[in-house]
Amino acid sequence: MHAEERQQAILRRVREAGSMRVTEFAAELGVSVVTVRKDVEVLAERGLLARVHGGAMLPEDWAETVPPRTAPAAAPAAASAADAGRPRGAAVGRPLTLGLIVPSSAYYYPDVIKGAREAADALGVRLTLAVSTYDVDTEKAQAARMVADGVDGLLLAPSAAGVEGSPGGPWYEELGVPVVLVERRPEQQASACEHVGTDHGYGARLAVRHLLDAGRHRIALVMRGGTPTAPWIKEGYDAAMAEADPAASGDTLFLDLAEYDAGEAAYEQAMAEFVEGVRAGRVDAALVHPDHEAVVMLQRLRSASLSVPGDVALVSYDDEVASLADLPLSAVAPSKHEVGVTGVELLVRRLREPGRPRRRIAILPELRVRASSET
Image 1 (cartoon, rainbow, N blue to C red):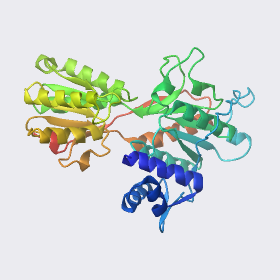
Image 2 (cartoon, helix red, strand yellow):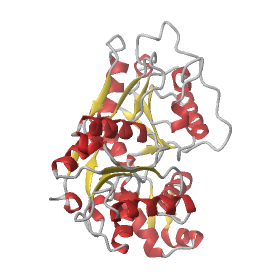
Image 3 (cartoon, one colour):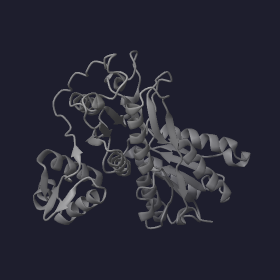
Image 4 (cartoon, rainbow, N blue to C red):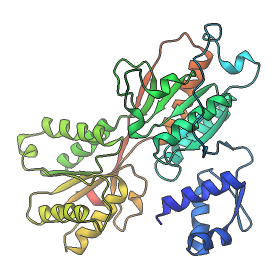
């Protein structure tokens, strides 16, 4: 079981039971007590649970929504005309309550959650959290349950399948409360749904331009193409390569790792193709998404007696674990905390000022240059 899976399991247990003993849970998972204790420490540092002697529990000031295990409740009818112009919370004289649904609480989204929580505290609103584990049926059920429980608006990062439109519009536009998409964009151009997220196309351009400035011209793109972020990264990469000197847009390599895991034939073939491309001189740099694939790639290159950045420069995308590699990896770092803060601010302003123009906000990431691409 990977670290993210263990941490998701820990959070589920704490949400369901209110607390968890490290020794008992380690025995259930068949891992060491030390391993579970480290997972608890990581989650505690991210503010997702509180450490106690021998275990963990929910933070006293953090209300989480337990993912429903039953069929989703029917979505409520749209708000009445009488209530359309004022926040639901204000209508009954209580503080606003927001729901936040994210696909993971162990990778990428912890900083988004932290930023949202801090912004909610600062604005005097209550925030509830649910984690969908990238399952569209789960997030639909969670959203329906939150609305039935009285949330005034939702911050939502749908699974890739959940973003797709339908003849009647996206499912989240039929919930009857304002919705702000987080790190997602509505597929339908006519959708009026507000969203806030990272400009991943700009991030990919940053990486490519950095590598070009370092004298690299045969830049590969290696990524998991099925992720919601992938199309924007590919778009930015293609644009940056097209704008570059013609020598930079020649024999490059694009590898889609899709949903393959290490050890599967397709994954191993893709990695071998990349290593061979470096050995043959067809590749002298790569942008790799996500981070942990760049860490694996670094290990494969070293095992093949190829040097980084000598034979090939690497830039990873996300900057979750890039700095922890044996050779610290340069990385494009989205401002995840700012995404969470801005999402809450956008939704609260929508609820408190319902007549204002709607907004779509793109936040620029930064490039953190480390040893893997230094000249």
